[in-house]
Length: 145
Image 1 (cartoon, rainbow, N blue to C red):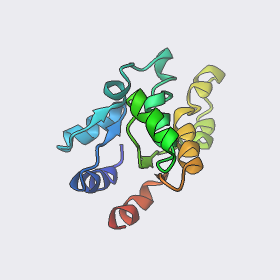
Image 2: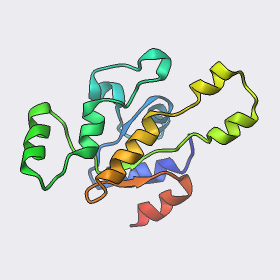
Image 3: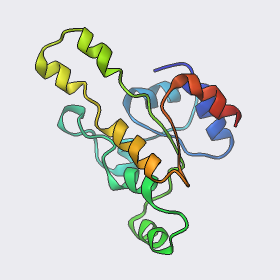
């Protein structure tokens, strides 16, 4: 986990934002003194299939995708207990560098990230309401915005 996440997370918390995170990032941020809701706490489901499924859940993707200006979407989100997610921060795994490690096929396949890109695409689809950050070098710029 990059140290760059902590100042961004602190700024989000300062403005009353809730931080939702998985695994190691959640631990890192908690160790830094921040309140964090884990993905498991939000969804009610732990990591599945050896870590392959964590964020692929309606409370995550619904929170990213529902249109805040569409009364039907807002009502459906409320009925399903889905809160809006307004900022998606994802560090995409550098898969090309993983290939350079020359791991076996099975190990390499497990490094393919599904949830991160899915959240990025969901945020892009709902860009009128959701911002997305995929590079730690952009955290400071976002924090100052």
